Image 1: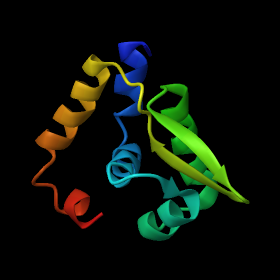
Image 2 (image 1 turned 180 degrees about the vertical axis):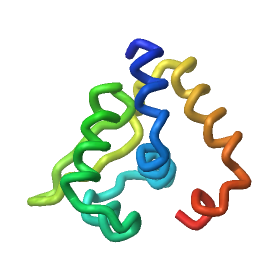
Image 3 (image 1 turned 90 degrees about the vertical axis):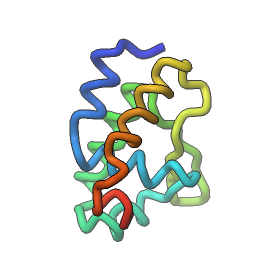
Image 4 (image 1 turned 120 degrees about the vertical axis):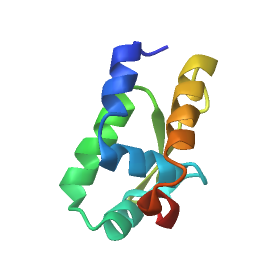
Length: 98
């Protein structure tokens, strides 16, 4: 299990929250994140790297594309933190649009 301070640090950035929100529906390609969020690929990759270091996401490769998804082996406590974060943001227009 990742340290809680690492989890909270990973969740403390709006871009990373948006990335996780998009992954709630399943695996997502980096190229999709870049297009939807309107950010550069290096910036998106840095945010995804932080989520990986926190062990919140996993990757899979499909040819030249890397797909990210929320880690399936999250502890119940960490999963609850993530779900509570999204529940608190349910009225956020940008999160709903994503």
